[in-house]
Length: 103
Image 1: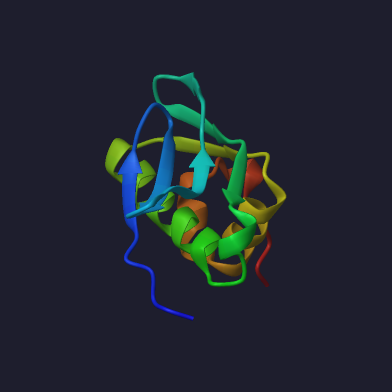
Image 2 (image 1 turned 60 degrees about the horizontal axis):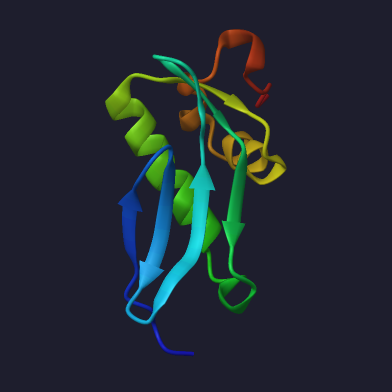
């Protein structure tokens, strides 16, 4: 399979992965609850592009963006929860009561 030259664009509480000729490869949506808190609602990857690590890249891009914005994050999406569990360094964005026990 050819390597896809993806672009990531932040727009209206979501990050969209796209490529030339493919406007939506995937997205992560995170509606605001307040000025400094968002909820990760879903991570989606178009079926033609699944299994290539794109969802993990979307979560990583979101984490970087959320840190820049100084947001606190609530997780609803099961995939995002799994990624935060795998990457303890992401958990600084969560309220202490929402953090996963990684021991």
